Image (cartoon, rainbow over all chains, first blue to last red; front, side, top):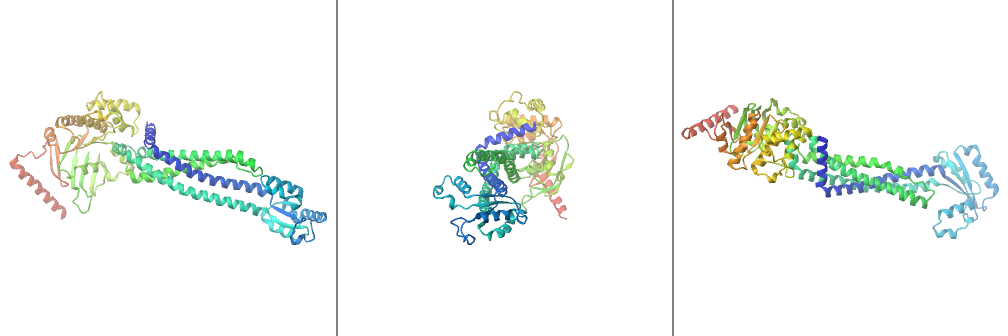
Length: 304
Length: 254
């Protein structure tokens, strides 16, 4: 009976305060979408780190016709130099650091280049002999890059040794900045949401002061009096959080899953299922914040 | 049922206290009028019984319990034992008569079956049978007050506090309301009624407690609104009463 009563009170509160409730829903929706987006960016970064760090880490570029590096003074790499390098890679002193390596010839490099820049006119002006052949190394421990670099930079026929993680790290730091920005916007929006919920609850308590006054007099408990108001805020916030979760899922499913993953096929994107992991976090966050701000507001404006 | 021991209530340090060391006992099943001019402390008395406010000094006992010792989470339980009626009825305008009375039972978690059984009974007691479906604005003032009384007593409180329940009603309607309150009192409920209405007090001939400037200046059984002593003696008696007051105040100062 009491539960049914509380539920009907919540319903009437939501109906009476509809416009405020809608604005609470929208503000929590927007703020939690930003929170969720930041979360998804972090997940994406982790996913890409795991994927790329396993794959390509260090590239040893070999001299070609156009190389200008000091080690390439004697011209393009000879077969003998290349064989020596391969031997060095297989020697125990180097092998302990790398898990795997493979040779990428110029024509393979050209093919990859064409694929990567298929939408760009630069493809037309590049020929296979402009691109260097390379050894691609997977490190057992990516931090040991320095040893590889020292060993191979001075070898004849090597143009340069690059740690490709550096390139990725730049990308990741950009994505980190983006997710920080999202968190910043989210923080401001969450403050808005909390204040708006507080105002809504205050209005609601004011418009129902007659009922609550009578409830107090006939000895209704604090829970029965306050719960409908608190639930009003919590329900609105949870609806907002559910909308945010749905939006993020749609982004992950359609934009990442169907559009971006076709445009950039060799990048691992987070799946829609992974995006759903964020949903309970958002719902708990929304509900918790709303409950807390309602409770604090009621303590000031609804005497029991 | 209600006992005040030297209760003083000060709202504002600079002004005189709203209640000034009031000692009073209302027995179980008694009907007591609380009379006095506006600002004499009647409403403060009722608020202290309900623990809407706490006494500045002294103790308030309700049903044998010192209300100062009731923790805030137990206050609802205290209030369930006390029904309250106001001058302005305080009905919920969007609920009909039945729902208004049922509301008092719903909020304390009574089952639907008990509500359906009890509410018509109580409406019958206050003389509103057959008007369950009416909305408050479709009722006369007297009928609205009967609804408010029904709501106050539907949970069978031991005490009924009425703060000028006839203040907005004409004399004949007021007498009807008094009949209802008397009936409730005869069923064993202690009734304390604050009022200005001399006709009613004179008609009912119940205990009268008169407050003036926060002090009890008269406490008589089966009394009238003003003192029962004839006019000639009245001035003497009032003087006696005030003289007594002065001596008591002096006694406290020592």
